[in-house]
Image (cartoon, rainbow, N blue to C red):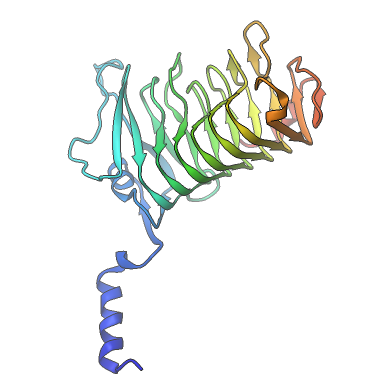
Length: 283
């Protein structure tokens, strides 16, 4: 049985050191606060508004992106790209990043040749209720979110937009769930998967993406699309919308493809333009 003194000490410890409690919540509204909050066993809540993770100040003109030089979080680094840097989050588990309100929070980056965030060696991640993309248009080399050697990732109620080459790039990963979300306006394609398995996409919209490929999968298995719509994928010289080597690597249930002469596949309904889809959704 605890003594009155022991109980008082425990209460005092949790009052003075709230960070020792599992599942701590961090509310952030700036680049520095967001990067400092990255870590395991926590929920990061973004205030309404925009957080630009990497900026390109004038007159640099995409030649010298700013990254916080005093930043010292061991879970956050960066990769140099053609016109700036990609923020890299690594070795994190049990972390949730979520927006406030209904799609009122945005994570953005100014360099056109970088991911907004690349996650490496992470597990048990949840990203929800966010808008994420690049602030400027143009040709790109990387996408919105990248995942390498990650397990058990959930993205829900998110809007991922270009001009990243793709909305998602998933490599050497497993246990990925993408639900009730949108990938739109990406410059090269929709998504790319390599050496990954157990990937589920449900009740999501993929719209106005192009121009070289749709969904690419290499050395993958267990990919499923349920209740998804692919609209207005403008592909150069009409390559397959789903470039998978063999359709046995992927399954479809109650999916719709419009505005593209896709090969007839079980589980996909081919339709002419679905303009009502763009007006009914407030993405």
